Each structure stands twice: as structure tokens, then as C-alpha cells.
Length: 329
Image 1 (cartoon, helix red, strand yellow):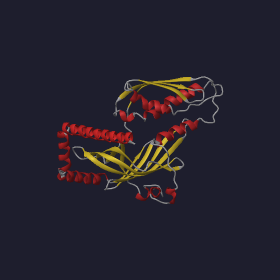
Image 2 (cartoon, rainbow, N blue to C red):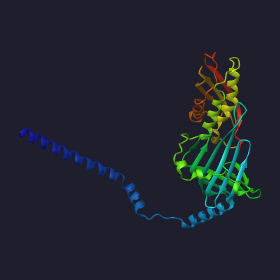
Image 3 (tube, helix red, strand yellow):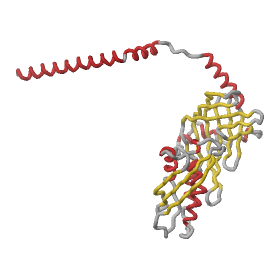
Image 4 (spheres, rainbow, N blue to C red):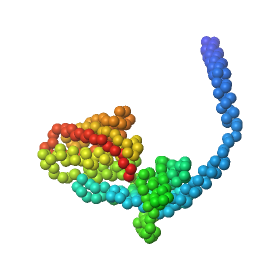
């Protein structure tokens, strides 16, 4: 009984000693950081100062810019058909068609309906150019099954209004004003898919962060499925896919790193396994010295699939070397 009391007393003394030591350490830290703590406390207690005049001026520029770009805009080319209704409060309604020619020479189309919000944060000297926060509110993809994309994501957008030509350049795509019947601007029922209703509630997710690139890759792979390719022609078929389809698709992963007109070289070697999957990817070239710059190409190439033949029992190495120039869309 006596030994137990001594043990308890000893434990209490130890705890008390540790507590005093902890207080001592905290005091030392506080003394050494007193100046920093004083600054932090002053910042917390000092009322925040806003430049209301500057904020109001920016809001006025934003309203003025919305007024200039508001309206119905369209772009039409071999690969992109896009219509935008720009509201005077920054809300965007958009219908987009991405056109793609498959390896078999067929034109395939991916459609998107979306609504988003454009919030300019800085302006050029003449207020005709703006850099903006771009918030996607909702997007629906038709491929041909219908699915919803990311409900909300934030990106950046550049826009430039060329007043003399009445051209609106949005993220490097040039739009002209729509002069047809406004009732025919959007396909019938398209915008209804963006509003809550039993159809949209039952709609599945597209389950991808890059719907256009994933769709094109899938369409390329589907183009040679169930085809009988002669063993003598298999390498030529693969090289054609690499150079004319997979390489352009791959470059969409990296084009944002380069400015328009900038050139870079790419030396790419892809080892294709007997089953058509990609086994090894080697990337070299000007602009790809770091692992971070090579990784997007490597990750993309690992998703490729090449045609096979019954007589193909060994791996095959495909090679691409080229100097490429970043183009404006």
C-alpha cells in the first residue's frame, strides 16, 4: 500500500514537472517570436482597408465591356462550329460542335451545350481586351449518348473585341456576329437540357476531365476494330495512325505551354506490344528537357491502341521526328 502511494506521488511529481517544462518552452517560443506575434495581432485588430474607388472603377469597366461584347456570335470552320450568346451580365449560353475526320475518312461530330460565367479581372489599355475568370456552371455532351460534364470548374479566358471588324476573339477563336433568325440560333430543346428536369436528373456523368480528347481517341481506336489487316501492311497502318492522328491528338496536351508562332521539336519513340497497347514511350526534343514537360505526352501515349494482326507476335517500335509550330485556332 505504501509503495503504491509513493508511486502515485512520484507520477504526480513527474507530470507536474513536465507541465512546468512545457510552459517554459512555450514562453521561450513566445519571447523569440514576440515581434512577429505583435505584427499578426495588429493586422487582426486593424480594420481592413478597401480601395472602394478602384473597385467601383473596375466594376464600371466590367459593365462597359459586357455591353460591348453582348450579343449573338458564331464561328464556323472545318473542325469547329460554335455559337455563343453573350449576356450583358457575363452569363454565356453556348452550343458547340467539334468535327473530326476518322482514319476511315468519315466525319464524326461531338456536340456540347453549356452555360458559364465570364468575370473580367484585368483590361487592356483601350478596354477592348480582357483577361477573365471563367466559371463553368453546367455542360452537357452528346457523343452520341448524352452525359453531363463537370458541373462547376474555374478556368481562365482571354477575349478581345476588334471593333473595326466587329470580331470577338474568345480564347483564340474568332467569332463574327450572327445575322440570321435568332429563333434558329440554338437547336430546338438544347438549352432545356441545362435546366433541372427529370431527364437531366437521370443523366449520367461523362466521367472524364478531357471529353474532347478522350472522345477522339476512342473514335480512332474504334475505326480499326474488327478490321482484318494484312501482316505486310500493319506497320504502315500504325505509322499512319501515329503521325496523322495520335500525334496531333497528343499535342493538345501540351499546346498551352507554347505561344502562337513558337516552334519546338519532338522526337518520339513508341514501342507497341503484340496486343496493340503501348509498352514504352521515349520523348526528346527542344522544349522537352524536363520530366514535367515530357510527362503529358507519355501519359497520353500510354492510352493509345494500335491495330494488330494474327501474325503479329513481337513488339514494334514506331518513330516520329518533327518540328512543329503552335498555331492559333
